[in-house]
Length: 193
Image 1 (cartoon, rainbow, N blue to C red):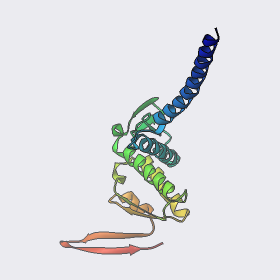
Image 2: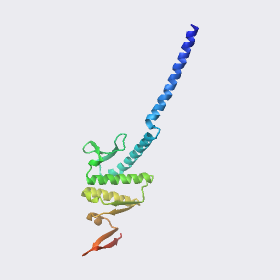
Image 3: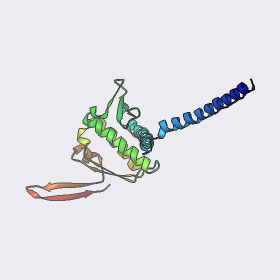
Image 4: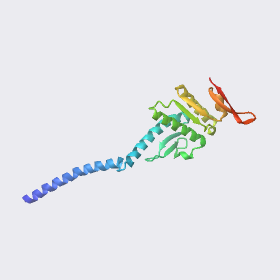
């Protein structure tokens, strides 16, 4: 009987030890599942998804100033950027956006990234090369209002475009035009406010 009591005591200690080790194992497994392979791929992916979500949050603030139709989001645990179409009630890939919609989303992403890189201040200078021709009149107006707000916040905005409406609405500009009758020469006109 004494021998059985000793064996039972040893057994009880082993069961308790196993339970404690199981908890440690479960904790390590949980950590591994969250961040872990030996090459760091899971941790990198987790950090990239977190950074992308911050970018999309910043971009959404800018996109709301252009259109209230869309919200940007991550595709689950992937790095895919999706668009919540708030009017249609569907989530879809950004590749399904029209040219003008893509321009506005790209501008919002660029401004969101600029805000991230400068700790919320944004970079002091921004250049936009084309894309304005893809916008309808209302979207063009929304973009120009946003760019004017950026200018009022002290940011310099340079626009390269062939859209006539921009020439009419922007006071300070550098115009480059071909000389009439001579395709080999151009004239540069500087207009300041």
